[in-house]
Amino acid sequence: MLPEITDAVEGCSADAFRSDFEQRGFVILQDLLPPSLCDSLNTRLDRVLAGEYDTGVPPQKTPGAKELRRNLGRGGGKKHTLRVVDIWKCDSLFEKVVCSPILGKLAATLGGWAGARVAEDQVWIKPPGAGPLVFHRDSPYFDFVPDDVITVWIALDAVNPELGPLEYAEGSHRWGEDRRGTAHQFFDVDHRKLMDDA
Image (cartoon, rainbow, N blue to C red; front, side, top):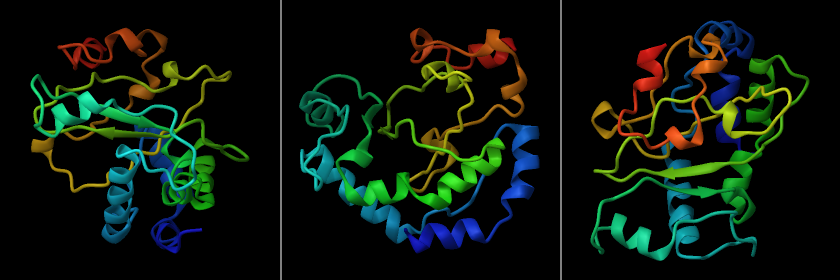
């Protein structure tokens, strides 16, 4: 268990957050992970991208060498948002964060569930100049019945509006099934269409 996560989560009331979560569809916990842990995770991410896995098991998906070179400015073409899927399987520090019992308990409390489990993790790498992702809901991307999903988004770098951070549409969890989005729309040029049409 990571005491840094314990300190951050135990300093707040999950029950109080549940009411806010039900109303808005999201909650924000500032400084969930301390900067030193974020720095360590970024170092470990660099190692994973270089093909070093301290568990000996590769992640489910990693960007290719050509994509990485392009995003680092060492290749031609436009920069793209990249992702690593299931990094917890290949790196023990990411595993401690992703599989933290404290985060699981928080997600279960917010969802009104007896427990929670990890479906997958994704590390999104969005370099300057990469295009936006569309506003969407995560549940259509998982094949769960019922389709209750809680996403925990943790920024490993300092984020400000100029960097194009994650944005939430307050109350969008109550919009109905016709505003869910699909994988075909994920990188649409008009990244606000689903939200603006609602």
